[in-house]
Image (cartoon, rainbow, N blue to C red):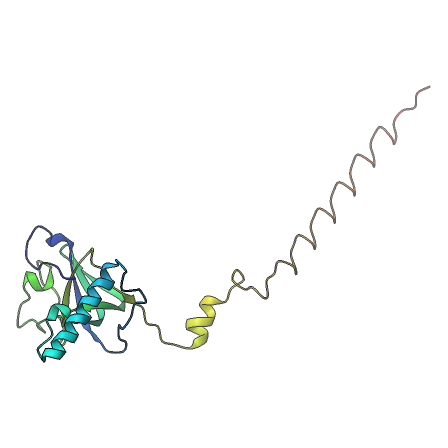
Length: 204
């Protein structure tokens, strides 16, 4: 994880995430075995081993091996700033770079990724730089009444197994025009009022 903050060759693939550390959840186990070739699993295993070694040697854990969750409010990419419609929680690496608050200290291009400054950040906002090909974990947290966040989105006719409407009230059995009111049986001009049967001149 990580990306260049300079105008290097791969600078256009850099994404700058702006938010704050999220302490409500923790990343412990992704559920994949040690033999997995998933790059995120390998990176987490390396970071965990580095943390254990640093704690054993009583030294500081390198920032590159510190991972956690952050609530992201916006990001910059390709010279543009994007405000998220709803904040999301992402797995990030390192403590993040503190962003200066207010307009007293202008932001640099390395910090914001945008060439002009119309807005300013509030206090305690940090920036994490990632590459567009880095792997991460996104967690969308929704809090509310169970009927609103769980029942309403999940209860529908298509996924109701025990109360399916395939056998009751189907228009295939009741009220089909194939059985009732078809013009083939009632009022057809082939049987009533045809000149061949009624009112046709008799041959002598």
